[in-house]
Length: 227
Ligand code: SIN
Ligand code: FE2
Image 1: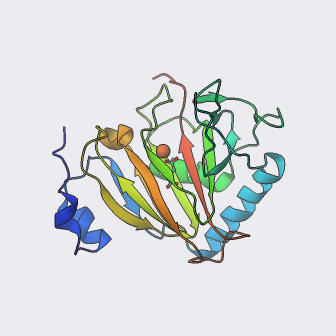
Image 2: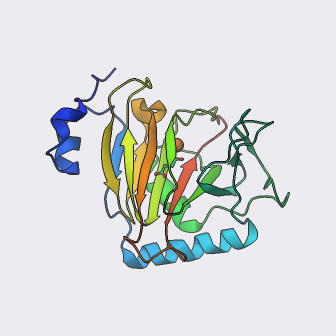
């Protein structure tokens, strides 16, 4: 088990890169800045736009309270991650508003999974989050998947976001760094079940997303496949 990461107070004056190198992060966490160049980001956004035409963004609600998330969501893949007041967090094969099956995961993302996942089976779900200027995502663990030997791989498009990564316990110290358009994050290995979230968006830092904001694409394997 990795040591806890360094206290935030010690990290204040470091760049994001120095911070990463100076701390003992859970093994299996990777931040790959600029993985996709500008042309690839535009192509990926085009492919995601085709998904959104079939599966429009909707506003999910928290289990029990029914409080609406500040992030809009949709999915691609055989399964999509959804949440609502009565059903809670889960995966399902259809869009909760249209009832249609989710569109296929874009080719560029399947290729990304092959390059980075180190896992022999394809992703089943691609959660697509849309953050407008005041959206955020509270600290959480991606824990609704049966298969945790596969990593979670995410791609940032559009405005910069302040991302935080903690440890396996909610109370563990967190590091914060900015994710830019084209960056990829991998939560694998011991970091697969680490707490993480998005504290805020820096509005207007990228012209990429129509209407402004940030799109995050998260690839996941849900069901266990043998071997
Ligand atoms: C997520 O944890 O589902 C999304 C993370 C992000 O937006 O970078
Ligand atoms: Fe997550």
